[in-house]
Image (cartoon, rainbow, N blue to C red; front, side, top):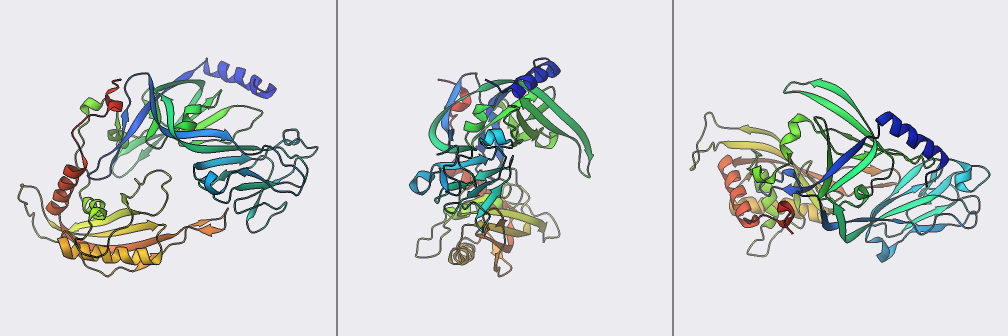
Length: 427
């Protein structure tokens, strides 16, 4: 049952949109092992898919008890291990807070909250919200000056199995704006899309990181990256995202039978992606964490991990050199930046030594500098903390045919020639 304001706005949305509805179709992510490129492949059929995902559940409490006494709203300890996030909302109206006058709510993610601002206790003014971090082992706590202050707390819990519909039809109103960008290398249209839904789209809350709902409207293909602030009395849900730009259309696959990926990158990335698999046959340094291509790191990945960013690829030869397979095989040099998260000083130093030893053992790349491990500040103001982030800048030399051969060996060891059940849609 919608609140009075929400019922009125629902009628307005239906009239303005002429009872418009959109159909969202489920796509699954495929990561090409040679170069880490992401593709989204349409799941065929119209049934359901069972996969790991998330479940939305209410917090441990929906109102405070006694004024000035902290109350826990998200589990800590072992109970927090499956909690991948959540939201705490302080209602904007006094009536929704259950009070005569609207007042702030106080939140703490390090222990019991105070009823005033401290180094770790944050103030939520009426209408404000705050996100609960994943795996918060100390739990989330709230406090208020008055007794029985009502609030909203929603948690997201990872579950091993959730059933997702392949197609979701949602009623609402779709808006988009168009801007043309004339760039040096292309002229493209940018479309900012907003969909006002009459109901919350529950599958969006349950979907796992390897799935994505994509919709089509005319010539537009779009997905949503955020949801606007919710005004509970309006009971309308605003989803926002950018439509697919023409330059990225190669990564969305509607027909898997036409999908035949090949090596895309033209630099040393295959060497770096395969490098953590090397374990010396003698006691020596190893890479203790996975490496990902820059901009293609898995969603909300927990440290430790590293991201490889490559710049300034250039040849050091005067003419084209051809390799044994009649492919260009120049001697090249590059600047490679490794971004590390959750890695302490010892692990970072060991990684530098590992790269040096790998270079000596296999001679697939050569180092032309002695890199220093740099600490990079990445603050989180809400929690008064910084991430364990480091950066290492390598300058390397390598031959192009070696990088291609590394990719070829990588895929022979990682890719099998079969079509997964989810791709064919067969029962």
